Length: 504
Image (cartoon, rainbow, N blue to C red; front, side, top):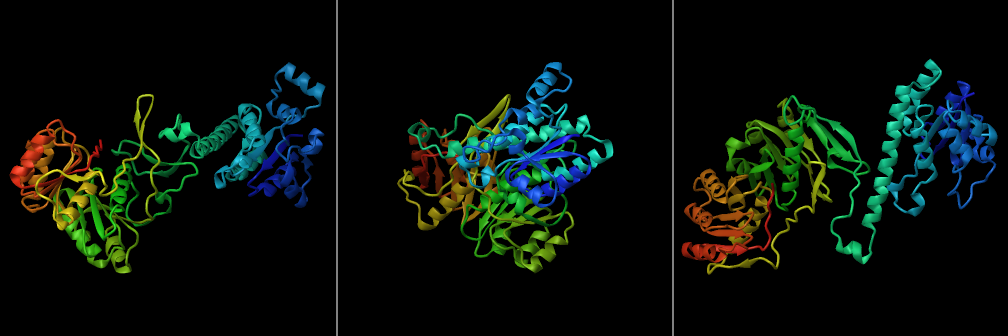
């Protein structure tokens, strides 16, 4: 008679599973609350305490950690020595282990670190040539159906279940390591900004239409146990999302959240090509789109207020891949969902990122996320000319936008509206020229933001030629004095932040 050991924290479906196995002629062994739930349902089950002859001890910390349990799980029935040991010590083979672990992530702490559960699950997964292991209640019905049909689980099924079991314990251990890192208040840990090791456990959360290109497969993965605005967002209409839809929407959604006033961001290829703050969300969209309407074609639009019909009407006239906002008025939703290819999404705010990671050969580059806070005590005016109150608002606005633009980055803005964005050039002068060309005189009297220092005065001269009246940049060049002198020559007010915002 085959034997199944059932010991689960999440008891969803376990009684039905036990009843089905018993009906198929299986002997059941269980422990603690699982055994009670099965017995209370009228299904015959042997408590593991009777099975081993040893009671639960140490406040239930030790229950299944016994040779009769692990010997039954780990035995190789084709090995003569194993068979002799089992006979000598009265060990019965265990053919199926059903287990899931204490919910550590729900309330991290020492007493929710499961020991017996992972030990059983890992033992069964190791011996999957002979033992089945089930950690997910969603697999119960399939396991029962296969046993009923074939009399046992196939090798392919046991291997698949073993893979899931090791993934389950890996996720569990990763959560514990992360908790230990986060709660380490020792002096050494406080000095360490990045942990000694990072243990990531990711699960596929969303298949994507395709990758960066149609011939590439793509999917969004989520860190196990993490919450994501992507999982709770509502897509009201449009096609399935592609890899670049997700990548660009994430960039747009994070940038628009940095503004407190009604704001709209238009992103193309992960770079903002239009950003504006308005009295209302409709006027903010019109201003953002006006920055670079050519690049806005096929872009991502993000708004930090409920989308109104006044915003939806002009937006619907522009080919757009995605529009995302906290909510949509009914009239706006009707207008936008009429565009069958437009992905219309409402979502909550994104959570802070713990790390910024990029793949390299053999691993990852890891850094702290860039802190893009506003004006600080480190900011200082270095020119004779001082920014006006209106220029200060534009300076802070342009600096926020610039930090989200690929380096080398130059942003020309005026009256809380970006007019020229130069992104991703190999030299800063070309970025300044692109920003000037796209602003086409509209930034006259406005502000220029540069994500890093001007290495030469030519970038500052280009800004002056575009009519810029105030500049914000990190400073720190060996030629700062030349650049400051150039600003004074042009009567430009210039602010040094002491902090750059490279973004590659």
